[in-house]
Image (cartoon, rainbow, N blue to C red; front, side):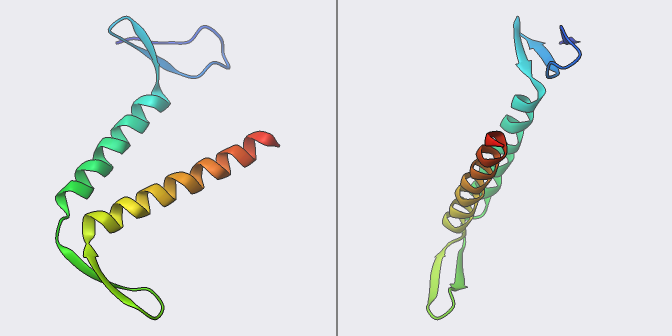
Length: 84
């Protein structure tokens, strides 16, 4: 693996099996893998109070919903910033 960039403003990349891969992509894949592992490792049921009702759910489902909500909010913020 070799780090290279053709221009000063290009994103940093690594060559993996003959293909250029951005460091950002590698970081995203690593974080996604860790998140999936963490969700899969937590399978017990938890009780959650949602203002008035109390719900008992498996922890993996709560973590998955939280991860998806965070990803959607992150995409919305990134999209809004790119439009400016």
